[in-house]
Structure formats: structure tokens, C-alpha cells
Length: 481
Image (cartoon, rainbow, N blue to C red; front, top):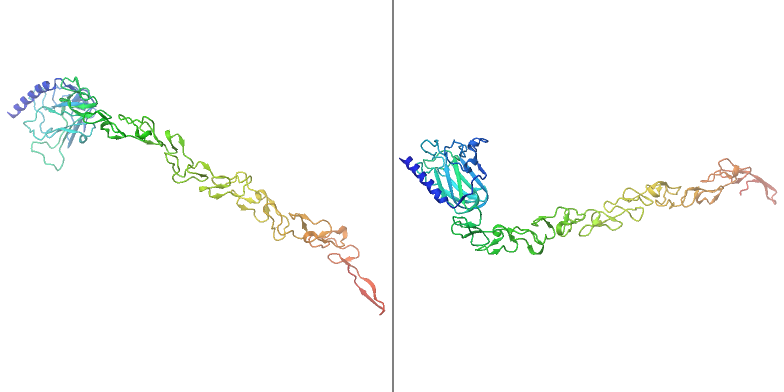
């Protein structure tokens, strides 16, 4: 008897749906659909789209007109209306376990406890709960079900669950599945209409969604607010519900109240239509058309100031000015070495571009020539300086004078012939062969000239001299020069 009542109730609902739907449009027809845990992926017999294809002559769940999923602890199916619609009511045709010729008997324990949501996303919890079954039993759940839901949204979501640890009524099945042969969503084909004939525009001009029966505004068009949507978004906000904040627009957040586009361009440091994107690394200012200087890290996207200081070789707030001539390195606090050509050194690492001044060596030209060397590139050898080659590293001048036997500022010139010793201020003795004496110590290298003796050949040979006439004494005496 209870099955017969169910059948009669279903027939009544079908007639009622025809009357109820009159004047509204099924906006779900042939729209994209999805279901969780498809019964046979790739098999059109059970595809999610079967529930929005307009076919409902065969409510047998295995008859190719129904969306069917595998039995699981949850079942989710949704249709994407592709745009936000104002909805009036939703009708569901549940699948049955008999072909049309047989006695209609849906699988009642499976849909018991189902829910219907309308949302602007595929997340049901972000939407509105239109209906939650907590009254139907095996004997009272209808094959065709309708619920009124005067809300707006883009997704209509069917959901059911049998969660572990939850106690359900005795009639409920252990698992759930989709089993929807058709789901119809009736409402206005456009957003700004109401009344059953879909011809009356919402009374408030800037109203996006109004109550489908009364015309009362339930949501303003993008960029507007107020009880009758008569006010544009406050300065600095835009979008649906005026909930989005304008970007960094030039002239006090002058952005479009509708889409947030900055009408006068971006403030310094930002780019894009919405002016919410900072300049790319290395650029700054209006339109991001200025290039950062030689910053140690990043520069301010607004004014280009280097926040953490300059790279080596640069100075100033923007780090675009090379170090002053003669300076280099971090903060330009290093002094160039002895570079050739007016301190032409790298402002970054101090390397001398034109080589070193005379007397210095190395990349930085800060190292004096090694002892005994001088001049450009230290490639000149010191002369015979007194005191272990103490010559100027710059020009080779002997700072302590010359060694014995040499003369001149560089001490590279031997004493003139016939002279020797320190400063060449001594005269050679009577050397054989044209005064060939050592320029260092005066020694005659080839011996003495006739009549002379000694290393220096400055001693006359002995002569007999009468030196004491009164005593009539003859004495041999050497006569010296």
C-alpha cells in the first residue's frame, strides 16, 4: 500500500512541476555537469551529463538517461549554469530499479538524507543550502522532488553522505550514490528579471539580482552599493559588493568602481591595469620606466633609493654615480694605488687600467718595486748604489751615493780613466799601460810604471841622498812622493 502511495505522490508532483515551472526556464539544460566517483568512466550510459540532457522518459538508473556514480561514503554531483542565474525552484528525478513498464520503485535508501545547494563556486559550503532531507522515509520519498529556492548562483550541487562514526536512521543505506535521471533548475534566463514571465526588470536600475517573485534587490551590480544600489563604491574600493580594494593608483586611488582599473595610471612603483603589481626587480618610478642604480641588493620600486647601500664603485642614494677619481670600492672609501695616468683605477676593485706609475707593481699598484728594481713595471735594475742597492724605486737615483768606482745619480757610470774610489775623487798611481788602475780601490791591474812600486804604484824606488853634510854621513833613504 505504501508503495502505491509513493507512486501516486510522484504523479502528483510531476503535474505540479509542470504548473509550477510554467513561466520559468530550465537554465540547467545541457549545461556542463560533474559527478564524483563515476560508475564507469568514459561510458556515456552513466555520465554526469545525462542528468541535464532533458531526457526523463526512462527513470531506470541503468537505462542510459541517468547520472550514476559508484557507491561510496559521499556522493557529489553539480551542474555549472555558466553564469550566475536567479533561481526559483529545483526539480530532481531520481533513478529507479525497474524499467518504465514495471512498477516504479526508486532505490529510496540511497538518496535519503540528500542535500541541494546553490553556490557561486563548486564548494557547496560557500553557497546556500536550499534543502536538506531529514523527513523522508523509505515509504515517503518521491521519485520526483521539487524544492523552492529563490536565490542566485552559478552551481547547483547535489550532495549526500554516510560518514563513519555517524548514526543514521534505520532506513538509510550504508553507502550512497548519485542516481539522478534529471535535475532541472528553473529561473530567469538573465540576471536582472523577476516575475514568472521573466519580462519585468529588477526595479532598481543598478540591481544585479532581485527576488524572483517580489523584485526586492538581493545584490547590486558590480561597483555599486546601498539599499537600492544607488551608490557607487566608496573611493578606494570596487567590484561585487565593493569588497575589493583599489591598487596603487595615481591621484588618491582613482580606480574604476566596477573593475578596479586605475583611470589615471599607476602611482610610482607599480604597474598593470589594477596597479597592484610592484615594478619588476631592477626598475622603479612611474610606469616602472626607470632603471635601478648599482644597488647592493634591491632598490625602492617607488623612488629608486638603494635600501642596503651601493655596490662597490658607486655612491649616492640612487647608486648611479661612480666613485670620485682616485677612489674605489664599497662606499668609495678605498684610495687608488699609484696608477699611471692620473689615478686611472677601476672604481669597483681598484685595478689600474693603464698600468702602474714608475716604482710600483701589482694590479692595484700599491706595492713598491722589489729592492734593486725601479721604474715603470719595475723592469729597471738599480745601479751600484752604496748600501745594498738603495736606489729610488721611482727613478733609480741612489739615495746613499755610489759604491766605490761609480759616479752619477744612478751610479751606473764607472769612474773616468785615471780616477777611482768613492765619488771617483782619487787619482790612480803610475800604473803601467796608461793608468790602468782599478776604479774601485786604485790597484794597478797590470803593475807599476818604471820607477814606482806598491799596489797603487805611487812609491818611488830608493835614491842615495846626502842628508847630513856636517856629520859627513851617507844614508840610504827612500824618498816618497
